[in-house]
Image (cartoon, rainbow, N blue to C red; front, side, top):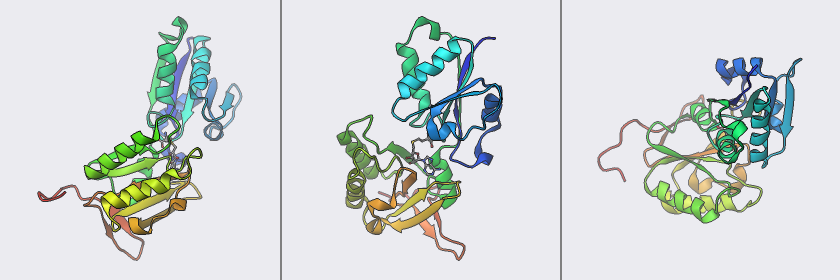
Length: 253
Ligand code: SAH
């Protein structure tokens, strides 16, 4: 039996948002590799070995998966959301590029999933309906000045912005600084969405004007989305809808 590696996205939490393609790969797998809480989402069964590992060991984990596949195992590496968004797919290719000859011709597939940004946007309405960008606010893998530069330029370009990893443990004060920069560039009235644990039992959504946003409204399970200058709220008794229109007026910033 020849081995393979599938790097699969488990979606934001709800089982209904795991794609049939990912479920089929898990059903065929002999091994599942990934960060502890993601591996915990895979149902154990006879013939399946689970290999949970700690965070921040992405390259080791990728090498382990490639080694197992080179030994003929059918390996699924699990990420939350989509595996290509701040997750294991790139880590696997980094390991492959620097790795031994026995890894080079392995069958490797990336199986997409619903990323947190899209799940959060869908819950709130449609804040990413026009041009937008996604920024990882963690400075574990890049220098802080780069984050500030990208943030300022994205705000200046009037993108709606989706922020992953808003509060990094290594730099708890970073997100307060992000909010300051956003207020300077976007003003106090701009809506900001805090979408926590979307599609799980702990889901919590808050939309506030930037002037009322506080750093402690976000944690590592929160997706933060800031609107563009065109993003608006439809107030309804059922709860607000946050959306960005499809078209941009000619005199927009
Ligand atoms: N590959 C993942 C992202 C990994 S980075 C994806 O595509 O979704 C981890 C960050 O994703 C978290 O810090 C948080 O900002 C966000 N996130 C992941 N799941 C989430 C969820 N269910 N609700 C809100 N944010 C989530």
